Image (tube, rainbow, N blue to C red; front, side, top):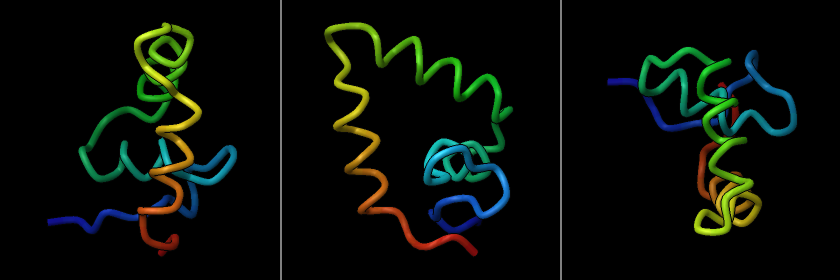
Length: 61
């Protein structure tokens, strides 16, 4: 099982979405687009979730 960490290679800002995509074997581009779409909806506070994941996820490997 893969570790839950930020990505060192698939990063735009902090590697959070890249790390999630690597962990769950998702396409990184699709994961970023999905996160972007969810972030602009009022139900999903995307920036807050991203910052929390940045703090919780381990350092890039």
